[in-house]
Every structure is written in C-alpha cells, then in structure tokens.
Image (cartoon, rainbow, N blue to C red):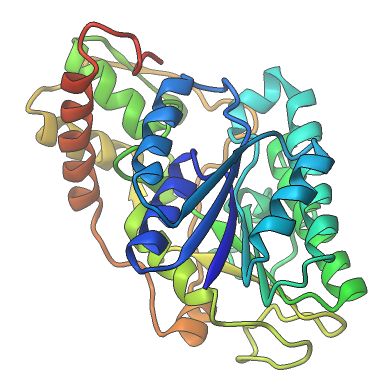
Length: 342
C-alpha cells in the first residue's frame, strides 16, 4: 500500500516509516525539521529511511498548504498517518504560540487536504494528556476529555475534534490514537529516558519531579508501531461498535483508541531500571510537580485489543536496555560533535 506519513523524521514517525518500508510498502514522508531539539538527530533518522528506494520525502511545514497539496497529489495514499506536531507539556508553558501553528493550523491543513485525495483511512496522533483532570482510572476512550491542564493537551483535544468534524463532513474514516508515554531507541532528547541516561552517563544529577511519585503507562515504540500498523486495517464505520467501551461516533466514521499496555511504571522504578542498565547510580534532585503534568496515566486498552487482537507487552526493562545500547552507539558515532546535546 501507499502511506503518507507526517513527521517521518520524528521519533515515532521514523519507527513507523521504517517498519512499513521493511514490510514492502511505499512511504511518502513529510516533515518540517523544526529545531525543537537538535535537527541532526532528525537528519540521522531520515538518512536511514532514505536508504529505502520506496521512500520519498518532502521537507516542508504543514502550514505550507501548496507544498502539502502537491505532496499528497503525488503520493495518492491509501493510508494517511498524521504524526507531526509540536510535542511537550512543559515546552507549551514557555512557547504556547508554536502549538497553535503546528497542532491546530497544521492539522487543519492536513485534514482538509486529505479530503481531496480520498484515502481509505486517516490515522491521527493524539495523546493521553487529553484526559486532563480526570481522576477515574484507567482512562477509557468513552471518558470525558473536557478538562485539559496544559495547552499541549488542549491542542490535542482540538485535533481530535477537528478530525471528527472532517470525518463527518467528508465521510472520511478516521482513527485518533492516544499515545501513553512512548520510549525506545532514537527517542526524543526532551523525554525522561533520554535525559536521565544522558545525565547519568555524563555524571550529572537528574531532576525528579513530583518527588518521584508520578506513575506512567509507558509503551515501547516497537509495540506502538505494531498497534498502529494493525489499526490501519481497522477502518471505522459510523455506528458499528466493538462493544460498550467503543468510542465510535454515532454521526461519523471516527473513533479514538488508547495505545498502551495497561501497566503503570513508577518514576522511581524507571530511574532504578536506568541505573541498572547504565551501571551507575544517579545523583537525584527531588523537585515538586511542574504545572501541567499529570500525576499518573493508566490506559484501558480493551478497545485496542478488540479491534486488533493486540496490546503492547514489552517490559520497561527491555525498552530501557534497548535505548541504552542505541544511545551508546549513537554517542560513539557522533563523537566530537554536539549532535546529541540536550
């Protein structure tokens, strides 16, 4: 099949594109190469994808509508996967304007442009952050998402709403998948796993927010990609429900799906796992919660299992070991440069 993927130079987009190319599909990548973190990491990911003859890449922002329209016209995709976004809860406190442009304008352009190429299925990245101030656990797709506690979360909630509107107006089958903290090789330097490993390897202290009491439903990136690949074939149809836990819309071929293993990892357990993988104990600076952070996330994954027969299962120890091995190889390959600076 032909896949059009936004954000292919990003962490998750890279892994998804590589998996699809390895499976023999054609992949058309689209990425703005923004400097949210060091662009050289994005260039390194994209260089690996460029080794596949079936990969074509357009470097542009989603706000550039004419270039986006042209890329979609060339791709003629069966499946569109929208992963490009301005990420990060904490960054949204300091640079809110970037979320309006990337996550709202960019998403609108992608959805509006997709209507003209009529893909079989559009898949749009959302986030567990949309559950906001909810205290009911685990988070289920049919729970209310009206109380975001950060602008990042609000932008992802708006992404889901825009996707539903487009699905209804254009009868365009759309799935919004909600990520729960994703880790793995080639991960983002702003995320805890990368930051902790980088600091411990260099002998620096690490900041532990929330006094270490936070808990996350963490997902291995390989497991996440497997779920997305399977969801691509789970095309929603309005009113066709997989059960009482299904978020399927009554007025559009649209649903939201959690992608997570349904297992929480405490922050201090993550730190201990990293220390064992690195072989060094970290100096820890205990700090209070930061604004916009959730105390815990925990996914109800019954809908994912019903739609795909699959749920993420890799342990955090396996994911951390894979990351540390990649990190050390990457450091060695970029010795003498600042390509992995954070």
